[in-house]
Length: 463
Ligand code: AMP
Ligand code: ZN
Image (cartoon, rainbow, N blue to C red; front, side, top):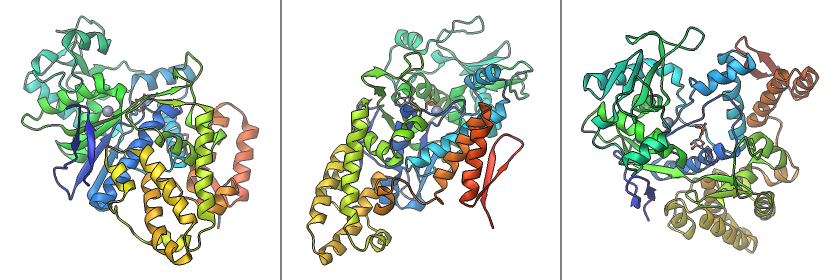
């Protein structure tokens, strides 16, 4: 069975066919680094990590390139800096570090490239210039705007009509706009804000152009898969299509659009004002990352996911049960070394069918029950395939003993980085005693911390 994925643009499940099987590209919109990531942000991380693992298994790890950006220039970051008085570079460095630490706990593999927007200003300017030259964009009062009526294809991804688009984009009606739907490619920066010199004056990019530039730079003009949460379909992704395709006519920007559904908490939309906002870090205080991951995967990625304490406890019970079965199996480490590809079983069929992870998980559990009844010889045969499937879901990554000890080896990099991020947060809150305790506890385990001038922290092993 071949991989099929639902494509937001065609609104159909379609066979996934990359442009070049030797070089499969996936771009996923990453975080804007101004605050700790919440469990809603964790959903695309986990969903696209499963897709990444699956693509690597189908095409080979060397033939898949996963690019997930860091948005480190944005008005939300500027606002956070203004409020706290902390330098922008310190906010973005600290938040990026915390993001890495948090998602490592969720067993998310790092992407192949993690471009930062501020390193791609020249590429953004190049696309903006091409859009101006072809009259898809215009300059007015230091702003450069994309002129939506110049693009007959605009709206093809989100399937919205013009009135819905203008309302949905909640774009300001500004005097420098020719049309209310026009959106910003470049805007002027006052001296106290991040800015780059350009022919339109000192300014900074709009958010949408960042992704068009970074995906083109790292994956070429056509990307096999572009993903993110469903909230990004409009206006972010619609605008990316407009910018990318109008600046490179004749080439589709994306072959396959994949979007995850939204996560709510106890049936309510998660938001700061409702007070039901859960950071990944807070969720990790209650349950190990692998439990949170299994909770995410027990609902199909396109469906809404409701986060409840009961749901987390059910995920923990399911994982405990699987680990208990593994704990009784001999030859676990040897079995982990055996490479296995998808073998046409029910598990593979489920995951290949638009990432049906709930079905794949129940199939894995059924197979675990079989394993628990097998002879040593049968187990030797079946264990590698079982573990390879668990690996595709990114679960059962620990040794059962470590799992039941409630902790893992001190050497675990994700844990060390999580501690470092906690220490930075404590220092920021001027809780120096707590920060020193964390430093001392790490030192006892042979981990030495070194603070850098930009506010981030390096670590190394002693001796
Ligand atoms: P942001 O930093 O807000 O741009 O979000 C980063 C990623 O998280 C994007 O792909 C969003 O679509 C996704 N996201 C944000 N909130 C949620 C949520 N409640 N449920 C699912 N995905 C979300
Ligand atoms: Zn994006």
